[in-house]
Length: 355
Image (tube, rainbow, N blue to C red):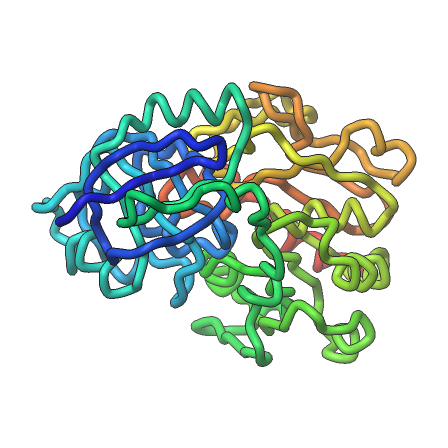
């Protein structure tokens, strides 16, 4: 492998070794602290437009298994790692991470100090960067890059019907804003027929399907960019049970007149502590987001805080009393992370029982 360079929008340059596909890719530089979940992260639509620093020192020493992919497409712009594992050891391994990234067209750089980079982002906030094989790349335009059009780019283009094995207990509309594959998987194993709908499906068209509930998926980008999606969620509120995850959680709050804020460096990884304010229990959760619902707007929108982040006190989950709706900022369906909060899907099932 040849040389590669990671150049930040402030002009700082790191020299390393190219892996995956050689070339140049610009994105928003973020970091994830998970020890596992390499393939899940690379295929998570929520990383659309971003270059991801993996803080764990060895990258993907268990190799790649297709079953771990969260989507069939790649939306991450590149990977930054300390060391690539060339000889993975796992009975599920189908190919190396080098083979996978080259086949999927993902640019990568290894051999850089990911500890220094993570501290830089943690202290200074996320910034734009480029992975390139051109040592003379002109970095001055990097500050102009912005992640845009992320939800239309990651959503399904057609309605998809997914059927469970055995009896159909409920029918759920999954609004696809960039959904991870593990969300419908959790609905299917609970006996749900899942209708995966494009992001721009109107509320009235959703209701015509006579679904028992509506799932608002995760997804990438700034929630405030999705004005039409927010309006349609507002049109669904109170008319059908709603469960929102990540971006869906944020847009549900916006639909009620709430506010969202961009975090300094976001929460990304499988080790994020979240406190349940109802029980006092702390869960270790999987997260991937750069925005949060402003806790100061909750009274005005009729929402009640259910979960908060233990590290920084930000909003991690809301209940909407009397509206048969709730939401979570973290991922209860997490793959490549703890699954202690999968009970949220059971709560949604129970909510759909009430007429």
